[in-house]
Picture (tube, helix red, strand yellow):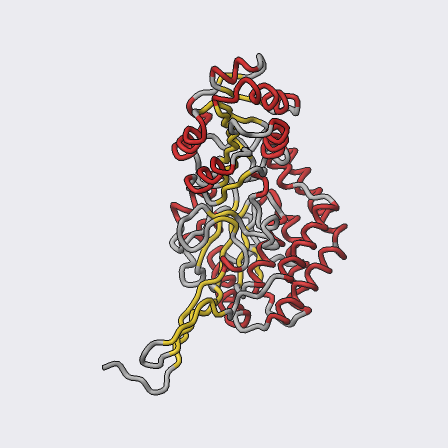
Amino acid sequence: MSTHPDPPLGETMEQLGRGAVSAASVLALASTDVKNAALAAAARAVRAHAAEILEANQHDVAAARAANLSAALIDRLALSEPRVESMAGGIEEVMALPDPVGVTAAEWQRPNGLRIQRVRVPLGVIGIIYESRPNVTADAGALCLKSGNAVILRGGSESRHSNAAIHACLLEGLAAAHLPAECIQLVPTTDRAAVGYMLAGMTEYLDVIVPRGGKSLVARVQQEARVPVIGHLEGNCHVYIDRDADVRMSQAIALNAKMRRTGICGAAETLLIDRACVETHLVPVVRTLLEAGCEVRGDALVQRADARVRPACEEDWYTEYLDAIIAARAVDGVDGAIAHIAKYGSAHTESIVTENQATAERFLQRVDSAIVLHNASTQFADGGEFGMGAEIGISTDRFHARGPVGVEQLTSYKYVVRGAGQVRP
């Protein structure tokens, strides 16, 4: 039996790029009904093949444990029956969203009779580089399909079996709607050089790259990419407990924001507490976190609240732990919290807990982050929770897209001008 060597990496990537460009031209013109039919079939396929997806995921999780990968990474990697169902439901939620393509965002008429419209169009071909989470395969494929974009997915090697099983379901959806399989492609190699090729060697094919992973991946993408990037470097998120906060609400929000899932970018990493309410709020909130298994690293005032609190250093205020660790310090009111976030934060997600509406509005207006919340957990920093069906990631950029990147954020626009023979004098 003869064996055929794999084609060189460059040849493989070029083939993916050419296929994506060709598919993008078809998908950009596909009707909403056709795209929705593909998504509905993909969701059915995910449910029908749930056992195969879970079996593939077990293989990945076992390999991750054997490689001594962190508990946080394994949590992001692991699938369960509810998580697979959530993937299928997420695809259906994207299907139910309004189609942004072709929507007229604005229109007006000039004195000379020209009628001008600003119309939403797909970005084209999107490259998505991600780590650990296999659900990104489903989310990203569905979002790009609904927004009329072809996509090239490069998942992490640790989730390759899971990604392949999920990708197969997306291909079933495309086939059912008679759309090209190249609308959603998965890089077929775990060779790390494929990432470098996407960043610098596919400028004629890729219109934008979205990184979704740890700090080192995102930093590399932002440094090396030769096409526009949508993404965030870190999720150093804060919860600020104000003097007018309800104590029980403060405990519940701080606990959920940190401990619901410690490995996601919306997990709180720093707890700030108004110096004016230290006597009433600090001990119960810190005790709640400690008793839930969270390590607390605090300033001198926080350390006095509980002997189990470890001393914090300057680096802690900058750190995205993605683990059951939180830094905590007392600040001088809401302005002290705003100043701390401005200095140490990553412009991702911040929450204030207070019953004082004026204080809340001051925080919401003056904190310059992609997402700001009042009396709610930072773990709501999620496209699905925003009613966007799903999201490719949270953008901390200040141009094009900011916050959850959903179907609308994966479109651009063009100007359509209709005249009746006008010429410019």
